[in-house]
Image (cartoon, rainbow, N blue to C red; front, side):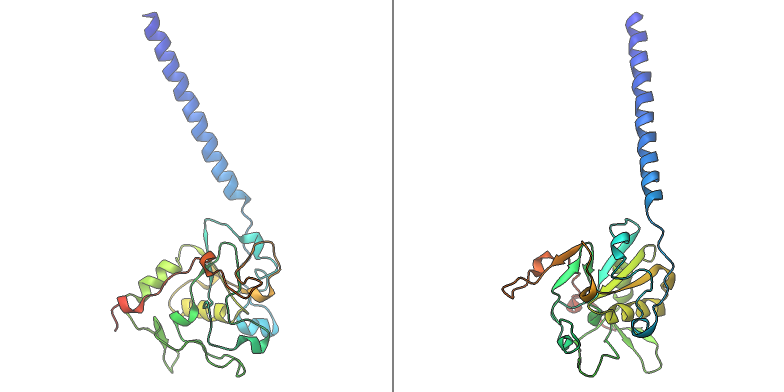
Length: 228
């Protein structure tokens, strides 16, 4: 009898301890969520940066404050090597570096870039998931196009976009908004070329080689899709 009472007491004690541990864990999770800084509502910058759609408040100088969030995805819209001559405007056609946490989804594979400076020339002009008609309407080129876009840019997440100078990121936001994404959950962070924060990952080595293996690149395999 005495042994039964002791065992019951131990079981109850362990149960209480388990509840306390679980409660503490839940409190810690909720507390951590509360510590996440509030993201300013997207607001386009003024001047040339505004023409590219770069955000006034969440950009190269502040993006470090919003990295590593579980409620967000981070996408760099550059090609690893872009055919366009971005050196002509002080940029780099190679993806020579990236911000920690950003994953590569090249905009030219989603839709053909438009409005590039004359000195830059043309970017990649091959197959794309979507096309923009003369009337501005966006159409899918593959049966899987919309699902791929939803997988890469989840609608229930905050979406941070970046590229070299801000142009490809702006085009990506426009594409998403045109296809039904909430513009207030998408930020054009601007260009890596102007980023001086502490989360820089260097891809270009001093000897001129590139460590592309450091990048998380989302492959878009057109040959495996059903063309419309």
